Length: 379
Image (cartoon, rainbow, N blue to C red):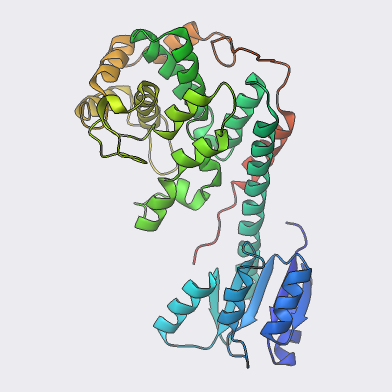
């Protein structure tokens, strides 16, 4: 971890000195004796973490943290408080977007551990934002679709966790096989292929604590997760050559019965490519290990998919999948290898230049893979 700037705010000088003693070995400490002074520091310096006492004259710690959101929204915020009223703490945390509160008197080791975890989470988000910015800049610069860039976009997401490595590519290839079985045109197959590669790219902004949570998601976490198809479509934007693929990506969680998201489309109103990618995505998810569950195997996956035929999945798409790999699905890897002997996608993309490998994306993806191993501290 690099050395960070930490702002400590307290109206009592001895408390500031104590915080400096505990934290200055690893980080640069900047002191402020009031909320107003702290805000001035935030306006003029790049601060990674704020630690503030709650009880201060003129401006409380919560008021400072709430005001800081408009100045430095990504700065991690820790509140030191002697409050015992639970509701007051809840209100304080909600109002100031507080990462964590620490009860006084605080323990030095506990504080150092909390700070370390908070800064790990800060670095992870910082790198996610940087990578997302790089993706957007590159997409804005592209005149046509580049095979290397498309692969780098997918790799950036796959690199977040070993469990998802290759997921986007497998979904893309299974989707093409289904599309061929259904008689799609070459142009439609190309868009299905690209949509499969990019279908989950919006998850690059979803915290790992949500992506790999072993338990059921809370309502708030589910809301964040359900935004990823729209976010994926926004990242793709108006890039020439990806207009239809973008629609497939945006709607790949629409259910055949209209109970999916984001728009609640049903039946034929759902783009055919999105209906195909939904089935391919579900099949691959069921047949590969994830941090929160093991693979259920090909046969059970096909049984589950058949159960959801007509409700979640388009019956025509399910029939096409069965026609390709059969009820057991044991030959799927062989079929994919035969149909796609190359290392990437099987179709020739107009304007594609295989020499443009998007190295800056790959470098960032490697860094992202290392950072993804860090578990962000929870409240």
